[in-house]
Image 1 (cartoon, protein in one colour):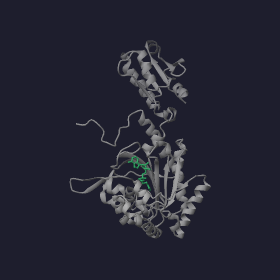
Image 2 (spheres, protein in one colour):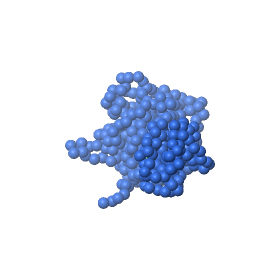
Image 3 (cartoon, protein in one colour):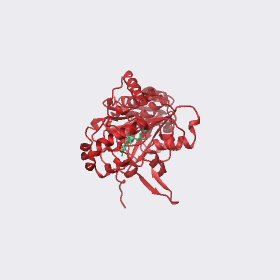
Image 4 (cartoon, helix red, strand yellow):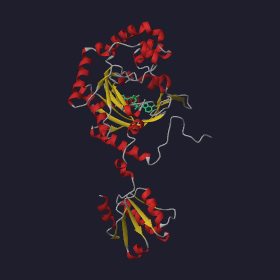
Amino acid sequence: MQLKAPRGTYDILPPDSQKWQYVEKIVRETARLFGYSEIRTPIFEYTELFERGVGDTTDIVTKEMYTFQDKANRSLTLRPEGTACCVRALIEHSVYGGVMPIKWYYNGPMFRYDRPQTGRFRQFQQFGVEVFGSNSPYLDAEVIMLLTGILEKLGLGDFELHLNSVGCPICREIYRDKLLAHIAPARERLCADCQQRYEKNPLRVIDCKVESCREAIAGFPNIFDSLCTDCSQHYAGVKASLTQNGIDYIQDHNLVRGLDYYTNTAFEIHIPKIGAQSAVGGGGRYNGLVKQCGGPDMPGIGFALGMERLLLALDNLTEGQHSDSYLEVFLAVQDEKWASQALKVLDRLRKAGIRADRDYNGRSMKAQMKYADKLGACIVVLMGENEVNGGFFTLRDMVSREQQEVSAEDLIPRLKDILA
Ligand code: HAM
């Protein structure tokens, strides 16, 4: 038996889990500020959803899916991403019959069978948003502002926003022809995967990381030159709106993204200091996806943030920033004969909303003080012989080391005062 988490997965133990909770709180609160509500979908879906939704020539579908047969021989797949799942839920529950646009956010595990390295896992967590039912370029800008707003709130102002437009199916067809003509003379030099991509989906060749492919397509045509009037105007609207709101971006015509559903706006956020896997988030418009999956013709846009990569970027998160997970009060009990009284005191504190704990391993008073320090308690409430007989408590401030006595009735208000 291997007592090891499977390759590409990991455990999150305390105190690291507190950092996760802090980041999750910020992303949720920010999404709510922008009018989003939470959606939760299953972590596995019928395989066909991703084949159709994400695209059967993408790396995700051809190489990275965790696909299995269930006992009734159905092909199921652990979700590699959240957009297709939201689209499926939208269609299944006919949510599009209600008020538009629909703004959803989600936060949960995704699965991709890729080669693990720093910032790349086989089970990873995404916080994502999806908006259905509007094609306004101002919405594109707002979605990007939600993403950059989250990063700013987390103190991660050192990001790069890469922006592109991948057009609509009409202009993409024109671009496809130009691209094929450009690549054709160098076709022999493409890697085995790109030989196939050349046939089925040449835009994917732009995304290939193999050096010989990059050389073979060097100087490839710019997609901006192929955009139709509507797509150019949409893209100009997004850029103008970002500029008006003080959001800097880098126009990046190499940016085609690893999923097939994108139309028009595509974007990625990079934080270079975290290393090779510097993309902390990415997204874009997918105006054809709902229809392609069997729903009505309805535009959509969204993004997903890789939570592990965010946490990597936040490696120097100071403890104060997530201090609400620490203990506020430690109850030091001198003798176990007061154990049941102590439990009542703890109960009063917790019911008053004070994070409190005590020792259950028979430590001496001195050892309990050390333990309280380790737990990060701000105040120790002492319960010794004098206190129990006199009906009061002694409070010790763990920073200044000052002590004060307080009556049993005043305990909670006094603690609240100090902790405020
Ligand atoms: P994606 O670019 O494939 O987009 O993933 C979004 C983010 O998830 C990446 O930027 C990265 O931070 C993180 N990520 C992806 N794969 C891994 C991995 N193996 N290990 C750790 N982190 C990873 C999507 O998934 C789209 N569904 C985003 C979207 C939503 N587009 C529109 N709506």
